[in-house]
Amino acid sequence: MDFAEQVDERLHNLAKPPGSLGLLEQQVRQVFLSWGSFQEELRPRHIIFAADNGVVRSGVVAQLSDITYMQSVHMTEGTSAVTCFCRCHGIPYEVVDVGIDSEDAIGVDRKIARGTADFSVQPAMTREQFACAAAVGRERVEAAKAQGCNILSFGEMGIGNTTTSAAVLTAIAPAGSAFLVGHGSAKGNYRLWFHKEQVIKEALQKYEGEIQTPEDALRCVGGFDLAALYGAMLACAEARLPFFIDGFITAVALACAVKTQPAVRQYALPSHISREPGMSAALRLCGIDEYDVPIHADMALGEGTGAVLGVVMLKTMLYAVGHMATLDGINGEAEERHRRRMEKGAEHQDDR
Image 1: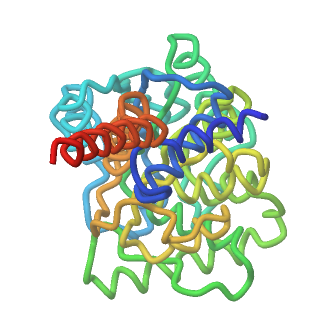
Image 2 (image 1 turned 180 degrees about the vertical axis):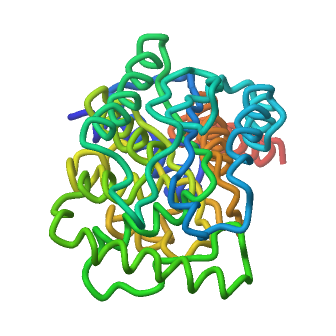
């Protein structure tokens, strides 16, 4: 019996109808296969890559880009949504500054530059900068693995990164794909949405001859956070380390990683469906259907909030697998109880 058969036998033998815990069973099965062994303890780490995006200078967002810096500070202080989620459940986390527009670094200092270039004018980053960003992602995964982590979750922070993600997704998606550009955090602002779409369209026309691979797309119209996520996901596959993606931005990074190295899909766990219209398209590029995603809660914050909730659900399921009664045990107990009842009934008959 190979290990996959052992996993199936163990899950099917839990004291419940087979498959009745749905996606939770599917995800814990995927995690066991990623590890190549049965482990009872989940040792997670949540990694947030933070960077500014030069394309905000073209007017594609309604917020100040300074929010990237301030929210990253709140993350390090444990007062952002995702870090509150982490603290509530005892999940270690780190904020990795790969390109916040500030003199000082926030969290783990891996600053490549003070934000990318404005891709409406020139490529977002040089080839050297892209390689550095991807290497940061790889390095943080290797560090987590060395510290004994057996599962990761990813998040991001960067004003303008729904624009960069929509641009990258449009570049790698099949021609004619529709509704890949969403409102981002400016929900209902149709004038801004139209401008954002035009900026992306014109940029992709500008770089049409230059974008031949997902890495080209990330370099020309992506962001340092996306490139770091991409490198991290490739590293997870090499390290046999399962990981949760979050919403739209991490799904786009995953689509790039899977296109580059299809084996990455085996280690990627979806957590929630973002309300960004490109989310489903990005997942489909990875071979993931919307119905394969456990959380449908109309979330669109980012930061890895959904990914952390995915870790919490997996931890719950892993505990259940290790502590639930088994069908073999229950069937044996039921047969024994039935035998005793029959014997007792026979004794009553003899007494009469």
